[in-house]
Image (cartoon, rainbow, N blue to C red; front, side, top):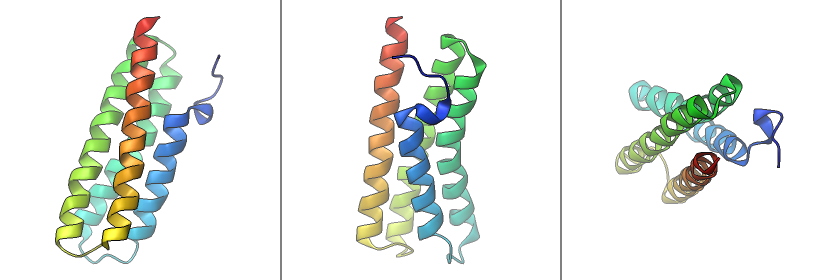
Amino acid sequence: MRIFQFEEIRSWQKAKELTIGVYQCFSDSKDYGIKDQIQRASVSVMNNIAEGFERQTNKEFIRYLYISKGSCGEVRSMLYLAKEFKYITDEEFEKLYNLSLDATRLISAFIKKLNEK
């Protein structure tokens, strides 16, 4: 299946869902350090997928996908802090954590597919 726009990429769609969830959960947070870091990391997941796609070479795209995957890990790490400090509920943690894992899995599968070409 040929992809014509980054918006068609499932991992980008999942990353967008993660970013929206992060912004919703942290909209009222007064800890601006954690709020800013987790928001920037979540945006990085989706933006690196988009930027890598627009580079139009598999080699560069894969490099950006790895960066995106790393940002997913950063989001999960920040979620542990947010949960520990009680900035988010256990339910919010689970939702965002699972979205991040889903995005990571999709990105990993995409990297594997691109490496096969």
